[in-house]
Image (cartoon, rainbow, N blue to C red; front, side, top):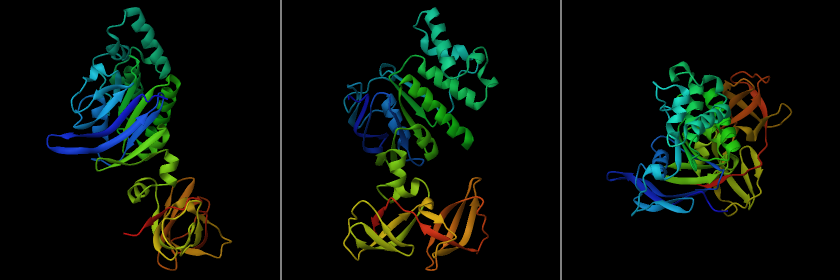
Length: 348
């Protein structure tokens, strides 16, 4: 299948500062991608280069097999068939909702404009607000209108620049799911830029984890969580701790928690000390277990507790337990391992 977007060995930056280091990825038609990483990692620069706001120093960008950016070429944004949703929505405050959406349809006949506006408002569940002004809408409603305006001209690719960052955590995830459903319904290709992994998980098919201008790993949210390629990804995605272990066999290590077996071969000889990633869901609270640990700290999360536990060896780990298991600080509780993804790293 031909890629709708192809980014090849992209280098870009500002003035004399190089920000992107040979970034490469692709998106198929209808696929939702995400650039995920901390502030300053270069993810917004990738989006700006795709949009045509920043030139490519090296490498190239292709949209529908047409080169739009390279060292010799920088096609203007209006010739790239893209739509954008910004962090601050960028709605025109003096225009009603319907006229905000109409803004990108000015070359269309008036009757077709009105039909498209109605279609977009129905798609985002905002038909009743056609005559409202942006200040009369909630943040979530404004976001839906911004999405409708960006999709109205039927762009080939939609770019979303931290579109949920001004909202509270629960609304961010809810809107991310809603936007995903809308994009999938319309079979739109899109790229989300965010620093929030939960937004990325809720919305994207493929996620690129970035740091210091490079993509460190690309994959589904499941793969990034359970098979992080390096320590940065392991630390940035989800929660967990790194503990020492001794390689017992090509697929087994020995830790203070006991033996851990995996399906994939460990790239180290028997007897080598390696580091192992242990997630909170890798440790199960079990009153019947002969293994135990001391509760050092705990965080109530509604449906569950996140327990911070100290083993007798002094090593600390985390454990998720249903919230009806309410244990006190300094209490000893039974635990057992439930690891089905053995992730090891060579020691520094």
